[in-house]
Image 1 (cartoon, helix red, strand yellow):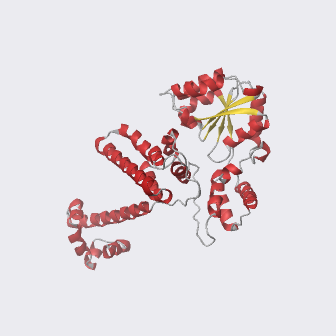
Image 2: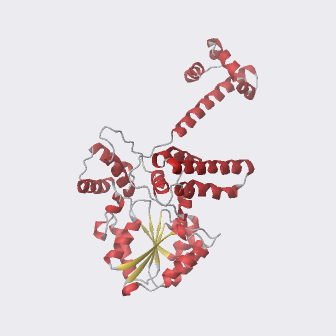
Image 3: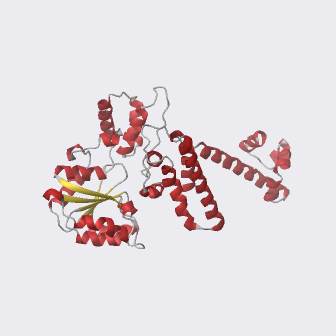
Length: 391
């Protein structure tokens, strides 16, 4: 069963909205190839339709399209193995051919030869090469920018997103609270793909169930990563999945831990938790012994390892992923510790006793600090007094 993003992906260039300038530039590039540049970069945040536009064009001009993801082209050797044959191979049935290199940000920089090799292959190409990037101004892409025309795609307006969402809901015969629809349209921040995911998720909830709509930060979505790892078939390129997230790996571990039981059960759940335990084991070795090369194994177990625990089958259907409760608990504990240190610091100045000693003997000191006279002498705030009385 297709998700709504795949089901309602534009099949024709006329279905692409609010990208008129970019569309015309792409048309000119393909029509005039080979011109001054043999490649273009479609630049813009995730979810605005960069890859979709290229597929729509290929359909319009009856062209073959060869799509390669940059995660498959990490360095010079993989570039020569996978991209070079595509550039040299003639199209079937005497059609045109477009080479699409998706998410070019993922290619390694000059240290491993990925970007420089891509530039060399573009120079030799007999066919138009279209790259997509979330941030083409990354320093490592400097050699590539010099060889490509950069075409900026706009974020889609809230009104444009809302129009598309309404059309999808009509086709699916689903009614949605206008307030929720407006919030999704606005908080998507121009990310149409995420907005469609949100209305699909909202459509499966009970009418009385509350839905939280987080504002998109234009980085890769943790919920999308969870769906990919926990529901799709395990594949090698999963190892780089969490590199796309604007989130510390320790926090990703909490998200995985929280949501594994929502999708897995039985032996697959046991396997997944066993591999999550190995992630923690390697994390400990990295911190204690500074063995940074173990980061690779941490990534492998957290992504491919967790995914492979379910076997070869995909997990179809909708799963309601949730924020990890441990994050809130850790935050609350950190807040309590910070409050304790602040109080200890004030008491230390009056008594000339070291703060570390006060914290070490906190149980006894706390009873002294409950005295209102002492509280007044060291100038405790109301929230600090509340903390002493509560904990």
